[in-house]
Image (cartoon, rainbow over all chains, first blue to last red; front, side, top):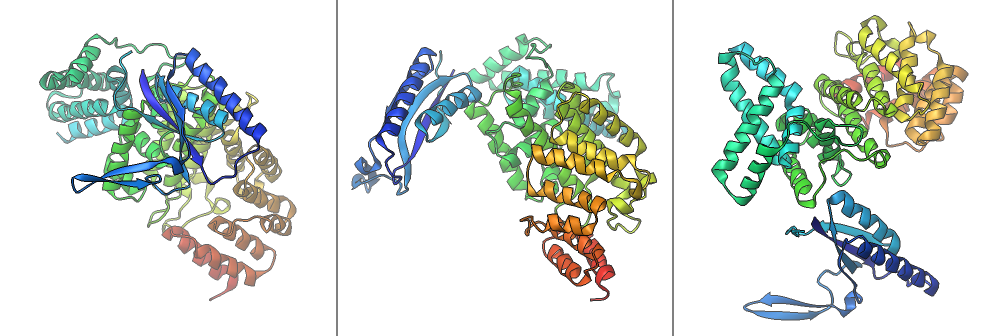
Length: 118
Length: 407
């Protein structure tokens, strides 16, 4: 089995949808998380606070510089992610498709370098 | 000696795809498979001219590639190499049954044409691994620097390995999603050869032949998929006209003016038989319908005898399946033959295809036939402004002066 990172790309400048839409999306994501766990594909997942909550620490002359805000100044930023186990890319893309529909956002699929030995 | 080299070259083109596909199954890695097959052909170049070509050249290449790969892994003796060596020593020669199909080449084709790869990478991988074309040949055909193409191949093979793109034939359920990507690559290769984007020659016969060969492999491996058979029929019917598409001076000759005795009768007959066979299955798709249109043209002994009503009916069907301005443009040409140039023009003028040279060529010819020479010349000028192939440009300049008098 390989491990894949499924990143949800969120446009943080988009208007917040009405509450009932949000609740419906949360319910879909909950159901999807349960499906991942029951299939044994679940490793770890989490949603993130907005990029305004981010802080960047970067090396500078042997010390570090700490700055407020996300590293990249783009409107579309990581909104949350799943780490899953899958047989191959086709299986990972199958989960990504369900995840994208559940959270109604683009999902980027990237393999981890080290294969899990199980 | 020379005969020996020619034999290796011929076997290379014919057997490369099968050999890489078999080694890829045994090794589970496309890059290693390609290196092993390359090694085997190097040995063949040394041995065949001296010892003679073996009775089963393809089998000889696979066996030699396998031995060379084992030798290579023994020299390297890393963990991964030992693992690969064990796979090679213990893997059975016969592939396991996979769905309805079991040919290694089909797995290789579906891997090369995986939707997670960019289209140019799919084309390059397919021509390199299945077709056995050299990197510089593919680069020349698609007018990209060789270094760019080599980079593209390396990147694609790395993605296949790192992302875990599976080396397998999709299941029956996945096939409708995945087959069109494979057919599109083969069609793209053919079109690149049939109407070379730029340059001096109109047709790159080598690319057309490669596409026909790939389509034959697909049809042999998936005889139950009507669109696969439809694509092969379409390519055979188009390819049958290659000798008649240019005159002795290398100038473009359009379908109505072609000397039909120069069409390849055997390819026409084969293409027509395939069209009939696949349409009988009652699941006409875009490739089958385009093949059917070309079968109607091939049926007519002269251009005047073309059954244009049937062509219009086929385009109606195609437009319903695959709505789009290019199909609508082709349909308008057929309508003009049935109902006159004014009817065709009315349809053409509704289309938003100003950046597409054939749109202006079609308008120019219809305006000419409708007795509006001034506008026809303007349309030829618009087409000339968008055409880069020298043979096509020469044709357009000639038509422009015939239609409008000396400029």
